[in-house]
Image (cartoon, rainbow, N blue to C red; front, side):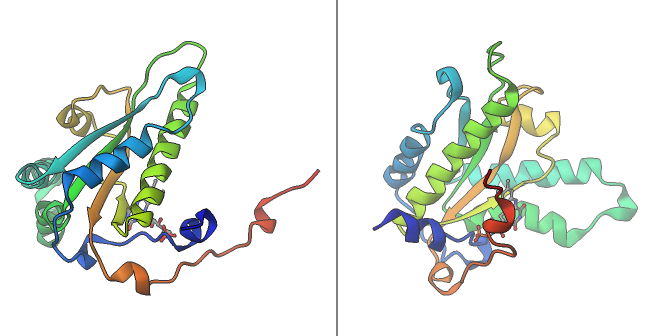
Length: 190
Ligand SMILES: Cc1cc2nc3c(=O)[nH]c(=O)nc-3n(C[C@H](O)[C@H](O)[C@H](O)COP(=O)(O)O)c2cc1C
């Protein structure tokens, strides 16, 4: 497939629209291999991934829902939100947490590590689109908390860029994309 149509036709698809089909690990590994070809300043390669599949999806649901319960005052507790945090990981075939590792390379600002990790994510999204795998990019629950970083095996000065939910879905072929402003309005030619 040509690259430009792939870029334009890639869509974010929420797990509620996933079929429940399990994607072979081999395909998920191919997506991760694409991620590893992202650019990075001074080859810091700061992208890190934590893959939840099979039974570990439920562990992720358990963890984020308990974190919600622990950090929410009783009067603000929302059972629907809690249930969603418990159940959503298991709607996906795989969930991948994305972390920008603070490599503390003196000559590379951390913002560039985040930029490189974002490139790695886009490689995943485009490779997934080419394989007709649906992906939802979610910020996730309390991504800035030390508790979530520790759960994923990372440090407080690393950054969680979100959680990618993978599945098979009919939705992506039906859902058209939109942009609210043109590229011309976001570009200055000098
Ligand atoms: C860093 C980042 C975080 C995102 N977090 C969420 C999220 O928490 N919930 C959500 O529904 N979509 C999230 N999205 C997906 C966007 O909603 C989606 O990309 C946007 O609606 C554009 O749709 P498209 O990707 O199909 O073009 C996130 C996207 C990015 C880049």
